[in-house]
Length: 92
Image (cartoon, rainbow, N blue to C red; front, side, top):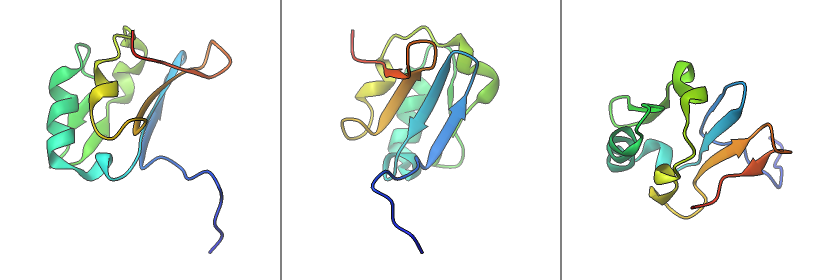
């Protein structure tokens, strides 16, 4: 088993304009799954039996509101702007 300095997110999804990344333990936290599903105004996140699921069909509907960034530990949910040199969304 190889170890890298940068771990892959537990949950990830990409659209044309943004990529969503959710790290453990947030991805497997039933409370976080429920909270992400409820705060996202465009339904990018779903609660899949207590686990975070990214709804691929809705990713490019993201309005960059930043509400998902408040769920879990700081930095555990990331919105990567693919059109802006992969800049991370920060809280408005």
